[in-house]
Image (tube, rainbow, N blue to C red; front, side, top):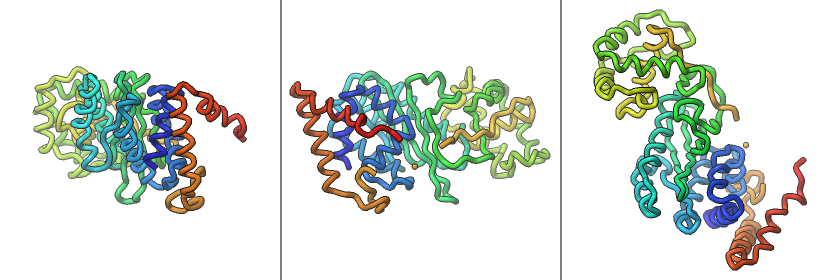
Length: 337
């Protein structure tokens, strides 16, 4: 699977450049199809982690020559992403700071700004020599054991906090907190104004929240959801930073989902600036699958695919591009239904 991933990356980079590779990884349909082509379980959350793992290992072997790199992974590996980015970017004379910032912000948006019940546990950051990047990360609902995947790309990204995703893939839900929705602009405007006021004033407002009669749609008010005492440290930190906008608020160290939710409630209940409850999720045979669906992996065919791609890539490097061009034209023989 790593070998086929490497061959596909070579062929794709030759055809579309690294920009095209990143664009495809940020497309949920293409990414899902790639996972199926590699033989991973088409209907499993494991497709995300295993596909990213195979791509990362392939890029570990060929990334420097391709000009394409991958950092991060699952669990503890995802938390080492900044260190990996610093090392990889330094190896190609690329400033790692914008990449590290993008990695941290994409993770924070999907864990704090988009509170949909999925805990982020997988984060992979792909980038090229020009500093373009894309992110594929995944969260898990520990109660239902269902997963949700989040896709990002730097190309065309105007803001980390206003409709930033290329896609969010998973079951749609009706009751969430979505601070990156376009219609959540009032909350994004008001929260920075709240945190630049003396913390004592905001803490007084927070003490009133548990006793307020809230609409049934909120479904998040309880002593554990909003704890005014636990907010003091965060509010003091925000007050000292004096953030100019919502993105700077979000970038504050220590600001987590509960603190941000509490500020959002203050924004809505006291200043009438609502957020959004709109769920952004809108969205499952070449070689078989390792779970046996639709049939067990056909290793003979799998190996032939790898060999064909490798031979075409090798010949292209030697100036003979006819085989690679022929592979590109194969789709004409099998038009879409």
